[in-house]
Each structure stands twice: as C-alpha cells, then as structure tokens.
Length: 529
Image 1 (cartoon, rainbow, N blue to C red):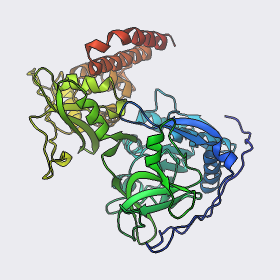
Image 2: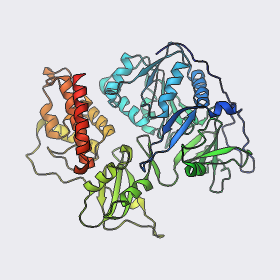
Image 3: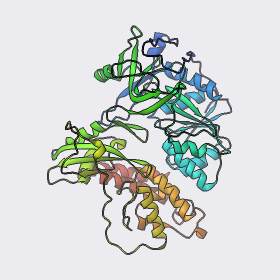
Image 4: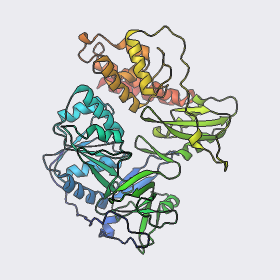
C-alpha cells in the first residue's frame, strides 16, 4: 500500500539501564521529551475493552506512533521490500502500530481478510501465499497457527519476525519454536494501550524457560518502575506494581477525569511529571529483565481483552432477582473460561442471567456460563473468595442413540477441546462453553483425527455433533474434506445464521425482534457478494 514515506519528526530516547535503582536511589528521567505541541496533537481515539459497558477512551498522539515507528524500523530492520501483516482489527492500537511501521519504512501493509482472521489454518496459508515478513498477534492465536503448521507440515520461509503481545506468552509456545529449522525471530512485547509498547524481549533460538517468559527491558522513550504499596522502588526479585514514565503516554482518559486521576499520578522524582499505574504486578530479575507476575485487584485478560471481574459482578448484581454475585476465570484444557456465579431468588436460571449480561457487556466480558449457588464462598474476613468458586459441571446430555464411527470421533474432539464432560449427538459446541478461539482449536483437532482439512466456517454452520458429522463427505469425494457438496456461499450464509442464532440465545427472546431484520440484511448482502 504505497511506497512513499510521510515526513514525521523523529523521537528517540536513550535506553536506561535495565535494572531499577535501589530504593535509596532516585529514578530520574533518562530520555529527552518531545515538544509540547507534538505531544498534544491527537492521532486516534482508541477504546480499551472495558467490562462495565463503558470502555475508557484513550487519545494517542502523533508523537507516540512516530517514535514507535522509528524504533520498529530500526529494530526489526524493516525494508521497502518488507510485507507486514495487519492481523489486529482497527479497534486495537496494534493495528496502527502495524500501519505506521509499514508506511514509515515504505513497506507493504497486508491486511488479513476478515473471513480468515480467526481461522488458524487459513491464516497460515495466507501468510505463506502473501510472503509475509512480519506478523503481530496474540500468543493464544499464534499457538493455533503453530498447531496448524504442524498438522499440515507447511512452512513459512518468508516470515522473519513474529510479535507476541496482549497476554502472557506460554512457556509451551516458546518450546515449540525453540529448535524449529524454519524459525522466525520471536519477540515478546509488553505494554498497555496507554503507551502501546513499553518493553520488549527477543526469544532466542534454543531458549526455554522453566516457569514464565520475561517481558524484557524498556524500549527507548519508556521507563519502567516497580514500586511497592508505598510507592517505593522494589529491590531486585521483589514483586510490585509496574508504573510507566514516558512522554509518549496518552496522559488521560477521554472525558473520564476521575479515572484519569487514579491512573496517572504525580511523579515524586520529577517535578511536574506523571507516572502511569498499569495495574500489573512484576519484578526485576537479577539479569535486569522484567518479569510479569499478574494483575492487581480483579482485572484479568481474556484473549487479549481487559476484563474487570468486579465490573462483571456489578452488572450481574443489577438483576432484580440476584442477591450477590461473583466471577472468576478457570483454566480448562489450556484455555481460559470466564464463569459467573449468582445467589438468586427463585424464578431465574443461569441462561437468563447470561442473557442479562450479554445485553449489557462487550462480548469478551460475557461469562461462558452463569452458575447458581446457595451462597458464595467467603474468606475469614468475609470477603468473596474467588479461589474457592467451583468449576461448573458439564450440562446433562439427553439420551440418544449410541455414537458410532465418525460421530464418535467428532464427539471425542468436542470433549477434548471443551475440557471433559459428556458429549452427545445434539450437544451444541457453543452452548457447551465453546467460543471462537476454542472453535479454532477444534478445527485443528478435527483436521488431525479425520485426516482432512476442516474449514472453520463449517463449525459455525453445523455446531452440533450430529449436524457436523452429517455434513462430512468421504475424503475421496472432497479435496477439502467437507463442504464441497455445498456451494461456498451457502456454507457462509449457514455460518452467519449460526452466529445470529447463538447471539439470539445469549440475548434472550426480548432482544430478538430488534436484530432479526438486521441479521437478515447481513445474510442477504453476503449472499449476493
């Protein structure tokens, strides 16, 4: 997309020593600041994935992306011949990082087609055919791309760099690429939307980690402080809250002065300066690398989206029949499962409460299921004890004819991806706790056990074991293994209907009337294209 390089003022910063000063030393500024005029010129307004129905707007200035693009061009060696993938949607700051990294180096920006973006097999093939040289994505999805490459035996000879950001990098993912002969350079990036990127760490060939993957050292123009509860610098190895100092911070939330004041605090070592509280817990390692430990309070990350558990609980307790509520994240079968809990009066069930949440929260903050309890577990101080919230049992399976042949193979794959529990012919993958990420994992597992390529769209179009199995045709009659008996457009329309029905079930009957016409228009427009 164009080879011209826009004229942007460069901002550089001297990288400070990676280790934080001892508590008796004052962490002074080490990087020059951009001009005040440049700092105030807004480029875009990006909203974080807030869970209370009112996400926070972050105004990111030109200076932030100009400095970042300059650093990325130098660090990654981006050339005019480079082909940079934009995997993130435009609602994420990572999309703008990819755009300016390409434009400011005269490279080509390649946008992943929307109908392929969540399909790991399709993305792996797209990376190969488009000869992508740099990819930025979340670790969870790159794990699926890795599995797709292992399943198909494909390689990506042109891929030079992979940026992993948005969530913690699993140790297993690093191990999977540690000794691959076709290995690109892997980079673990850390940073909230408020500054886009704060630290970086290249994961070297053959390198493995016993417990967690370090998030590295600050990039130029960013400084990282690890402070205790009294805002004193923590010694090496002692966890504390991660705070950022930079002239490239957003500086405030759009029309949210109270939240801005809590997040951006006065810098005690820099008169007139401010520090940003990330809400993350970390510590410095003896080698000067920063280690990510977790989140403060009740904030978690679900597939790269920030979710406040207390926000989910507040919306759940707003239901007139709910007396108290809780929410937590369970790790099942290598995936995260957000679950809500409620102590409610008679006359309401978990499905209705989930519909109540779906109508008021963004999709990443809607629990997979809501479980009714007689009482919430409590600590000795009578606080909600999220660590003792039970894992929901699998929904009962209606008695049906015994599973045989292909249906049994499909049901076994359903069961493995969903983390156990009974699965019958009429078990709906998405009603049983599946989501788009688990659907991609199921796609890979089915491709492996059935020995054929399974389009992701088929799982949305036929979400039960019986429907999916009936849609399969003998491998010899279909080079794709499934779906050739149906025109591609018909499969896509069926997938759209499947998604619409899933949304309708989540919203409940009261919300269906206002969306049926819109869904019909969407199906008609896609069918005619």
